[in-house]
Structure formats: C-alpha cells, structure tokens
Amino acid sequence: MAQKRVFYACQGVLFLERNNNTGHEDISSATFLTGVQSVGVDGNMPSTSLSDLGRFQRKWKFDIIKQREFSITIERILNKGDNTFYRTATYTNNYNTNHLLHEDNIGTQGQLNPSNKSLKNYDIVLIYGPDDSDRLDTNNTLHNIVYRNCLITNLSYNFSVDGYATESITLTTKEADYDATGSYTLPVESAPQDGNVIKRQDIDFAESVLPDEAENIFKDAVTDTENGQAIIGLQSISIDLTIDYIELNDVGIVRGADTGGEQNLWKFVSLPVQITSSFTGVSRAIYPLDDWEIEDTKFPNDKNIKIVADGLAGEFYIWDLGKKNYLENISVSGGDTGGGNVELTLSYRNDYSDLVIARHSAVYNITQTGTL
Image (cartoon, rainbow, N blue to C red; front, side, top):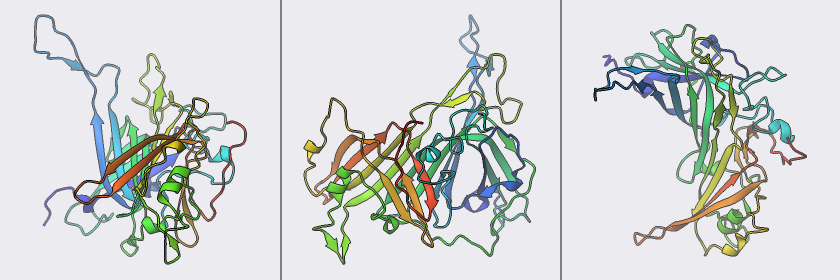
C-alpha cells in the first residue's frame, strides 16, 4: 500500500560533469551515483525588508540583487570498482597536469580560457519514485529536480578502523529545474551493487606515505609486529578540501538568472585552496615536542602525505597531498577513568593547493618541477 512518502529506497542521484559553460543539457546522459547514503539540500532565499517610516511592522520584502542559492550535500561510501566523485582527469607522474587547478581538473575561472575550458561544474539530478515500488524503475512515474552547473565547495574523505571509507561532497548552485525532460539510465535489477567497499584493511601502507611524525608515533615496524605485519596505532585518517570562489560584480546583469550556463561566468577560485589532513591514533609515548621545531622562524612545509588503498584487479585508489604539507596542530584526548586510550591527533595543511585523487594501476612519485 502506497504511503505517498519519500524515503531512502525511492530516491536516487545522477550527475553530469563538464569543464565548460554548457547549460540545460539533456539529463539522459547523466551517470548514476553509487554508494549514496544520504542527500541533503539547503535552499537560501535572500530578501531585504524595506523600511516603512512610522510603522514597526514591515510589510514589503523584495529580492534585491541577491539570488537564491542551493547547497547540496551528498554522503556516500566508496565501493571498489567505482570512481570517486571528483578525480584527476589524467593521472601521470607530471605535476602540472595532475594539479588541482589544471584546466582539465577543477580549473580556476568561470570564463572560457583559450582552450575553451572553464571551472569544472556538475548537474546534480535527484530523482524520486513511488514508495510502493520495489526499486527505482522507469516503468513507474519518476520525478526529478536538476541542480544546474554546481560548483564543488567541499570534498572530504574519512578512513576509520571501525568502518569503511566515506566520501562527503558539497556543491552550490543558483539554479534548479523541476521535472526536467529526459530519460534516466538506472542500474538494472540484475546488477545490484555488491557492497565490496573500501575498508581499513585496504589501506596499503607499503604504497602510502605518512608524515614523519605520524610514522614515528603510530607505526613501528621493527618492534611491533603480529604475524609478520606491523602493528599500526592509527585509528582514523581524514582528508578535507574546501574551495572558496570570488565573484566579480557584473553591473546591470544578474548572471545565470535567465541564461543557462552563465551563473559561474564571473567566478574565480580563491587561492590557495584549503587542503587539510589529520591522523588520529593511540598514543604509545609522550609526543617528542622537540620534533616540532621552528626553523628560520617558519614551520617546515616539507611533509610528504599520500594515502593509497587497494582496489580490484591490481588497481589503487590514491589521495596524494604532495610534499609541501606542514604540521598545524597537535591535540591529545581520551585517557579517562572509563578505560579509554589516550589518543593523539596530528593535523596538517598545505598552501600549494596540492591534491591528486586518482584510481590507477600504478602509484606515481609526483615531484614539483618549476612553478605553475
């Protein structure tokens, strides 16, 4: 019996990605996003109250200059054999083409460059079906909302000893189409997701590179082994990317209000892109503060960080944060009388906008040569 409700089993997410200003594309070519656990949308409808002298109850409200803005947050788990939401377009050992700001990756500007490339943007398609059907099926009446030309504002990845790898995606846009025309390409019933997700044991520490502080504190392969494997005190690893955008005023025109693909035209990436990582683990000794020295009145930004996870058929999932990270914060928690362990968290960041996300059969040692 239909309850006429929307719940997890009758909604799905598809997406289109591009490095140009195309708008209002047919959603028939959208790709189904696997592993989605939740989707949230926050719609901001800015307005301004006009003062009415002599009255304390303001009656008139107008949308002056500002446009509505939607923020979409998608939480998903990473199934082996599937791609991360964002990934480096061409993963090689070349620093420049791998860089986050390369024209084939996130890019830097909304205007088309000489190669006819612009900021990477996405159409996010949310589809909804009836709650009395076994699954999303094009034989039923489906409805959709398409959020056009979305820009990524945040990506985060978390790896924990008590769960699986998760990906959180936040995007923003000013335009939404309701019940856009077009067909859907949905997974067939005979090909369900297999649930073979990336878990803690899939982190490949032979290929990964931990910053030397984390290596010294949480990993001691010489003295701590079990069945020939190093005992590693790490409890969780997190990687976070935040992208802010600057938008120039275009006097006389509200971009994107009536012309598809123009809402990002005067936007630029604010630099440097914020890239942080943290490593939390069981503390096995007092942290050697002497290692956190100030050299030439500056903290050394020479920490190499790379997290690699084993995929299928010899593939690797790679999160390479480059070799210019620096230790930003040390925090200690736990050790309470309830029996909890003392845990140490080391937090890092880099100001080089270095983050390569890839799925590949090889793990490259990417070294910066020259400047971008």
